[in-house]
Length: 156
Image 1 (cartoon, rainbow, N blue to C red):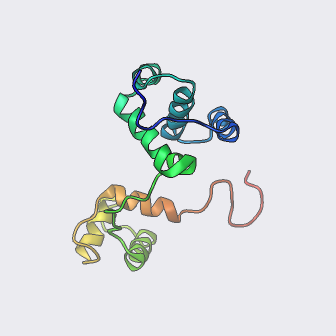
Image 2 (cartoon, rainbow, N blue to C red):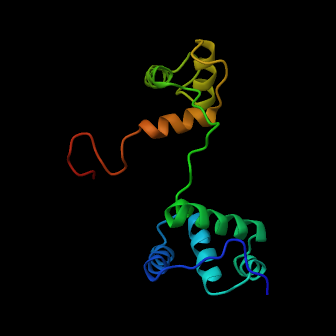
Image 3 (cartoon, one colour):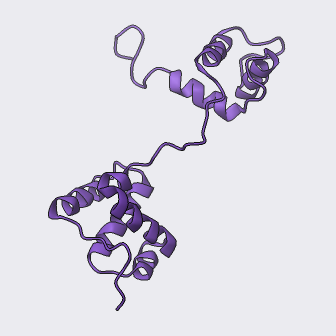
């Protein structure tokens, strides 16, 4: 049998960490899938066997093994920030959006919708274009934590 380019040999500590990660159920599905790939590969499974067992592609198995070889366990489990992403709304634009959302709704509307907010932010010249999904994410980020009330008293 040919030697694999990126063989996986987990230490007992790494194996234990991956098994705890899978059992906890507190991580993203892609992270749990990567952990399973590493465990199966360490047990001697081939890329095609792992791919079939985990319902993924052999290419995903290869990329996971390569990333483990190049970056170690933390490199595989934690995603890198995407390099070419930028925020449409900077801090000033986000403040404008929040102020707008807290203001009275336009005439003919009972409340602000995400689409109305996106259109109004563009109309005000804050940005050239803005999707309602970006508005949703920005407002979700700034909303208060669930279960906390303003007065400090327990909700009834």
